[in-house]
Length: 347
Image (cartoon, rainbow, N blue to C red; front, side):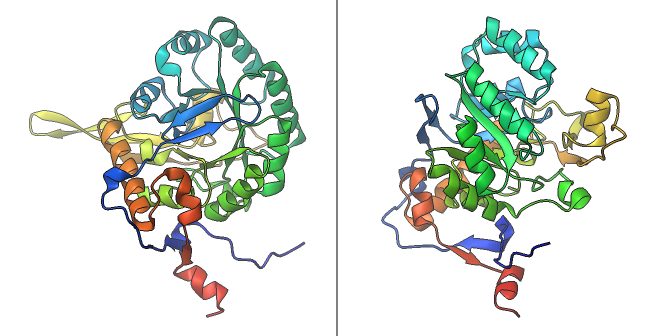
């Protein structure tokens, strides 16, 4: 047994300190970024936000809507091969990741889709990215897809970030348990405060010319700004994009006079009872549910929410004088607040 005494931080534990700035308007900042993927040499430009590969959020309609603003989507892995083939033949699939796990059937479906509609972006997604099997899967996928950008995870430490990049990942997905419908920390006691995980994994990845995607934990637009300031190249959102017309959740209606009005939408974690009953017939005897099912407010089209998120990031950039999004880590100074401040100074 070992105890680490260094403070580890979540988004709620810090604020970004403002700095002098020559910027006079949010309109003068650029929230887009350009990246070169280490293993392929290919480039991508856009707003580095990714809708999570959850079946409510990681949908094809979401991909079409976010593409208009340069953002991305990791499609959920429960679409049929025929649906995926048709979608990846569309120009609207340009910013979409094909998502899969580590099973033989996952790989077979990927190869079947790729044979008819070439895949350029792959998201290898497991809850526990620390297994040798997962590292081997990343290696095998890189060998099979030398020209595809590969995002792999999830992990929360620098050593495994390096291992996945060396195995062939261009982007490492960072986060264990921070999501709003994830109960991994409660069920297993395993996890890592998300802001510190991003800082440490980004430092490890950038040394190898790799990238990181902060996955989970954002509940307000300011959390995206903190994630980018901490070194996240991409930020993945689930709950903040749930409840929209482009989602695939069950909508709840209420009768208001003579009119039925949409008021809420079902949203659940992919390790929840709901997801496992839907796709696997129930929770296997050897495991426990590590997700929950909630109802989020119905929010209409995702366009308004996306503009709000981009606006929050733009405003944060003007507070610290960052003209371009890539400048945020160099311009960001975090100050600890609340309980963490008391912990550090022993109060």
